[in-house]
Image (cartoon, rainbow, N blue to C red; front, side, top):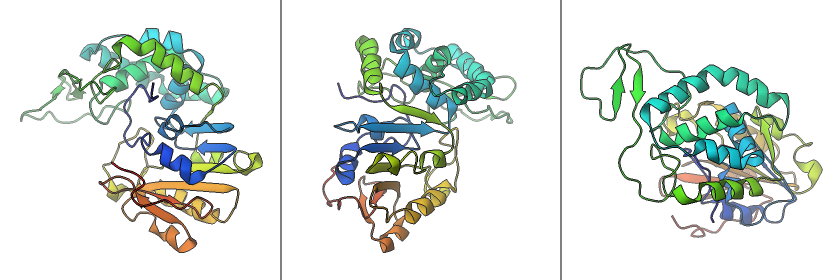
Length: 310
């Protein structure tokens, strides 16, 4: 079974992970500060000896810790069909508990809430587009046609789930947790749990995972940096914890540390976003035809153009 996240996530790097593994070469330690759907981790052919993944979003961290520790219970709670009213009730519940949940996952490296993890995973799989578990925006009702949205009497935009058929390729936006996986939900979650068995899952700012204690103290280290791209290169508000400017800060850290022979850094962006690194001996590879590009630090192997086919 090819492992993948049980929820859709914009910008997953699952398909490019084997190429990144080749670029990083033999490493003892893998660090992924912008974890998201854990694509860089799940797509590797061979796990690193030490692996640490984190995210600033407490819902994401809670979901992966619950998957790691309680796959059977999580699968049981996620095993429900797409249902619009339930989806909105789950959305409101999660928003009401967000602050408490983030405090919980920050309180201990293993802390998680399995019930909230299940609602978040299930709901993210039902929800169409962006906006899952972000505050609802009050706005004037629009009287023109709404497409796949409906409005409550108070003017809150209510998102409909996808009710058309799935293409059978797996979880997609609005298609539900069972899209392509109905008969294998428990086995899927158990396989993810086994893969995550020794992964350290952290919560908080990306820089907490970029210190020597987390990286080079363990020997040769691959650092996979996938921050939200610069605001002018993408739609706004794609992530619950979003920033238009963080990509520049991440690039600055990467260029400051790119001469460390123990660090093999891969930085993701679009078009020429991080071409300033090329003057420091970095290499670049556009890996998708929509401008998705990666930049590899001098200690990485040189990427071969044509090495990746989209």
